[in-house]
Image (tube, rainbow, N blue to C red; front, side):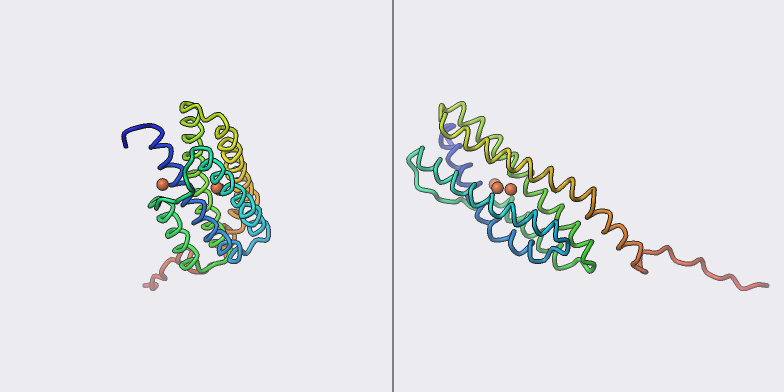
Length: 180
Ligand code: FE
Ligand code: FE
Ligand code: FE
């Protein structure tokens, strides 16, 4: 990796791969979501993500490269974790809480990537790319905030109630001691 513009291009390919992976995984999560609020938050973000992919394609064009993804092991790992949560959660509400958290982990990865790309675009004098990267960065931040609000106001509350209902989570009754 000899130059910043090469690093910029590689990182652009990394997030391009990640956004495509997200477009594959978010619909599955929206279908699995029990809360209609959570499902609609995921669906809204699917639409936003489609626009984000288009912005990335515009930036590839600006730097004279064809849009091509580069495998991102981070997003693959986050998707794998989300898949495990979806399979292993026994309670619908607990699964929602787990999926919401998994989605926030993805948003945080994206926030990090887009923040970096916007700063590098600035440095490289790619002034037309900067506002595109910043627009996506804002969408990722707002999505993260929306998910936090949903977790606190609804999803975590119901997941907590689910734990109370679940017999196996109740403290075991003390053993009866035989009277002498
Ligand atoms: Fe995104
Ligand atoms: Fe990556
Ligand atoms: Fe996102």
